[in-house]
Amino acid sequence: MNFIARYFHLAELKTTHRREFIAGVTTFMAMAYILFVNPTVLCASGMDKGAVFTATGITAAVATIFMGIFANYPIAIAPELGINAFFSYSVVVGMGIPWETAIAGVLVAALIFLVLTFFKVREKIINSIPQDLKVAIAAGIGLFIAFIGLHEAGLIVANPDTMVSLGHLTSGTSLLAIFGIIVTFVLMAKNVSAAIFIGMVLTSITGMLFGLIKLPTQLLAPAPSLAPTFGVSIQHLGDINSIQLGTVVLTFLLVTFFDTAGTMIGLATQAGFMKDGKMPRIGKALGADALGMTLGAITGTSPASAFVESSAGIAVGGRSGLTSVYTGLLFFVALLFSPLLAVVTPQVTSAALVVVGVLMAKNLKDVNWNDFAIAAPAFLIVIGMPLTYSIADGIALGFILYPITMWATHRQKQVPNIMYGLGIIFLIFLFIIAR
Image (cartoon, rainbow, N blue to C red):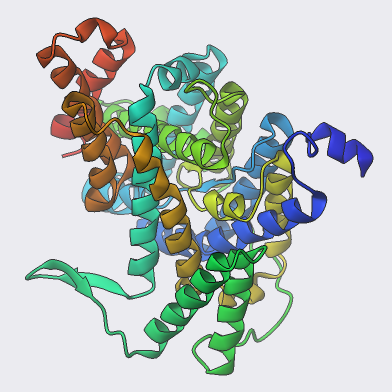
């Protein structure tokens, strides 16, 4: 145990084995839904649901453990929501590209990621982002995940007249989510240790007692075979031979790159890791992310990325890679105890996401709102993420405007050259590729 404490620098980070374990379990519970949601989304492309379930679990487990041991960050990695929908509904269903070819495109993007990571290109880009925009990214992610939590709980729903509105608050599932949010808020206000984790457990138990969450019918279930998807991406690499498929690869690359960058910056800011506007060991963290994307493509799932739900573990005190190790190990265990994960419903995780949104919104105070040339792009980042339902799109809006406002105020020399390049890339991305 002493070796573990020294390796993960628990004393320096002012944390303990117990706190890291609770944080690891909390992160896992907050993101366990991906084991069920990802296969459901990807099966719309024709992929085998059982194989995707296993690929999702293995990818999350290996990449997250690697993140913990190699980079010593409490950041989990798993196949990302949003990009999986793009994979199924836009690429496969919309463009008519076979899923075997699409997954090969994911592998190509992942290999490019590995090269960019090795030569520290990704690290240089992230370090060039101005501090005001970095904290805006963190705050925007907070609003984004709080919106996701409220939406998944059924408290915020689509409305053709007003775009969004309150859901049916008297339904059983909505009342369960409201119960979870209130309980967790009270625990947080009273500074109860592991408040988010306790709130999730109490919500799960309450849901089962009132019949809103089904009791698991069995404890053990063997992990489904990977055979239908394993290695398919390698076999179909030769299919990437057209401008259309090159565009698909570029889209996978851009969206995952900046979703990951934004998420890591937000999580690092929340945990207090940022030093002089930079994230220490970011190269190692990005290496873990690139590994996860590559492994996911080989085993059979859409691009993996740093998971915003890692903020739940950070919020309960997770500060070292030991948190990630525990989270990753639980993903391995989950492959055998998958029936038990059915109790972790969106109503259970919604409270954690909303609470974390509150905690991350405090970054708004660090934006220089008195300087409109900086405040305007920062605001577009913050508001763009929840309104476009995309971290990458929110970042794009702000990054396009930032060089423009700085030029308008004769401060073009203060803008890093990389930011000009990113502004142009995002302009192309938004108006030609993504739309």
